[in-house]
Image (tube, rainbow, N blue to C red; front, side):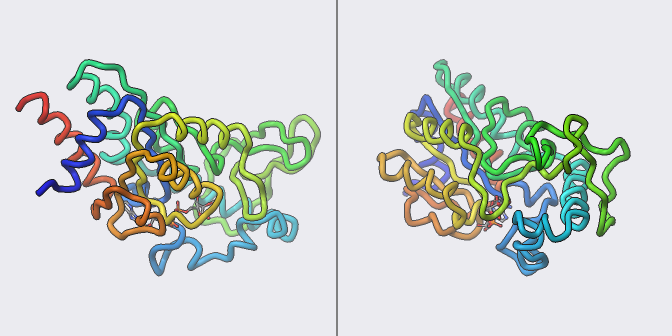
Length: 262
Ligand code: OAD
């Protein structure tokens, strides 16, 4: 019988263009909270309208800014794990095994930049980044205060735009806001042209991001999920591998490397 890891390794070895689609579970083992899969996930503890909507920002900018600065502090204090590193090494590993160039593109819903810190070069952010604040008024990139972010602060005055004086807001997409158009178009294109897609650590309930794996399914692409618990997208998968990102991804790389030595 073929195991999930063998099926996924074979599909990746046959692929030349691979999309790795990630959500909060990808970063869970780096100590970054997920949004909705655990009793202490972010949306169990915080109100989405207060912390992740334009209305919440209008009501209390200081509360919202402090919350995102706290999340940024948590991310700065942590490190990418072995799974992030395996994703960054996937293209080189495959090429070493079969000698052909491979393109691996990461499409992430995460705002933590851990893929980049692990060495992934092609990363599309569907939901923005904690590290790219911008002006609420003129949309120009903003700057953080020079002091490091305080993870404990419950209110914090947002900085002001050096160009127009407007408030600097977190660079993430809030509920009720459109996804950034260009990254989403690029992501759609990558999905259209890929041979295989790995879906890692996402509940698959937030759209339109979750439409991307469904598009891949409709186009007949190979789809595999790495998630300890089958997600809302599991029905679209060729393989559901119930493992964690930090454990499964290095194992997958080792399985691919075995082909070279066997
Ligand atoms: P969720 O919190 O909704 O889902 C996390 C998923 O990760 C669940 O399916 C878990 O089973 C899985 N998981 C947990 N630990 C894991 C591990 N160690 N390895 C692999 N998988 C694991 O997070 P997202 O799907 O990313 O949007 O949520 C989507 C969007 O909803 C987020 O981008 C965010 C949120 O509102 C914005 O902030 C705009």
